[in-house]
Length: 196
Length: 225
Image (cartoon, rainbow over the protein chains, first blue to last red):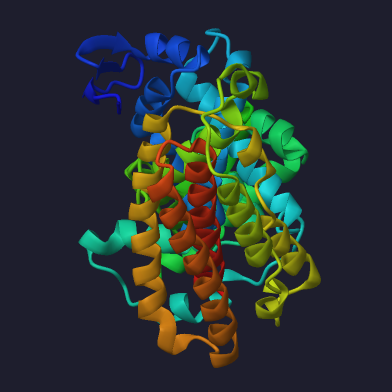
């Protein structure tokens, strides 16, 4: 039987779920999933898929790859669930794992080290008119997608996801100074794109 | 400090990472330089807009069925299979499944990777390798049926997407894809027939689910070409 589950209160710090008619905390679900309960893991997936897909999509700028990477991240999470200790929040652990999945994919495709053209070369951005306020978020998303991979990765991790340069350096293998340089470049390119 | 140097320091100023005397110097410069002040304001606006981006974006299709399928294919150890009594079943079912598997995997899938790099083609071929784990998995009938329901739903979405993009595809690629799809559909049809004879046969269920998965992988790759 499919587990009947619902998120009855989603708070990043203390989410509460209704699973099979019982109120469960995220910690309960993680324990059950660690014991092999796929229904509990599905509930965890349902509550975190938006964060993880959003992260993947912004980092790779390709919806199909983002779907594959989201699936890969959750499969990896299932495989490594026994290693999760409640020293950090499950969301933090899962997020970090997803970042590593995406970075591994970027490295395997040689996208992490490639040099990219300036954003102003993009015809899509060249044709962008000054946006009305209501479309600015869409334009920002599009401009982020058009960034060179390294600059985009650092921008998404630092400005969108809140990682620090030290953490980014550790995950990506670049120095903190390089991370700062990529962030500076990304912000400059985004301002340039958005001001057109 | 020059305007260029000041602009290089704006990120650090916002992050509060400048030494106090440098921070004071930058702020004094901003007080008297309109151009740098405008740049600083644009940077603040960008960060404000970034902070307002949604923290969640949801995929257009349900990704869970494929996740569940892959987990289900790998989770049950072979010991459980050995511990279960094997129901009696006609020998020809095994033979049919084996012949179908051979037919499907012998199709030269590499042809439609024309134009892709050797590396990508290798990756693509590796994705079409038979799922050996199928022979070692058990899982309950409910788990299998649930996985198949989800896969059928995802398959329908993907086939609709393929149909919409049919006109944009290279005719040569389309021919090869359609031949592969025909063989997979044939195998799926035969497995359904076999399951009518032996509905409780878990291996046939998983073989069927695997064929669906292969078909979806094929369509997904083609849609992206």
